[in-house]
Length: 172
Image (cartoon, rainbow, N blue to C red; front, side, top):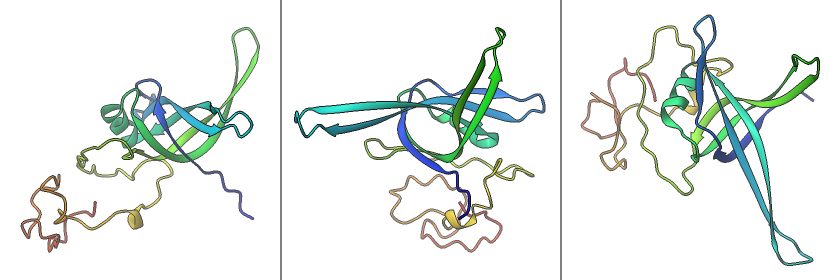
């Protein structure tokens, strides 16, 4: 059986994303995520709740998008992998923590709406660390007829018919 380390969490951001850059110029953003679990105690019929807190890290263009788009309190869906870091404090104590390294982050649309603005693709931008090709998860290009006129695509031929003959346009 292959070693699979993947996790998907849905929760609320506990602190505004913090954007930093490595010495080589790579963007990295971190934020906290609170995941609530609520259940009814069958013996007392009272509702009980447990909250788990996670640190989330993301890289490259996603890090910049997260820092520009998300804020404390936003409900998001995070998909990625768990990674453990260990270090030693100045006093010699050993510390360790497990954090989520995100492959995908999206706002939860269960109780909110959002508007998507597509970024211009940069040359040589492979989509970030561990992103894979992503081709299967991207839909066709151009506006869709049911988008209510809110499409953020520009210059798509066909006047919003959903058909695009422009082969140079990247799929979204």
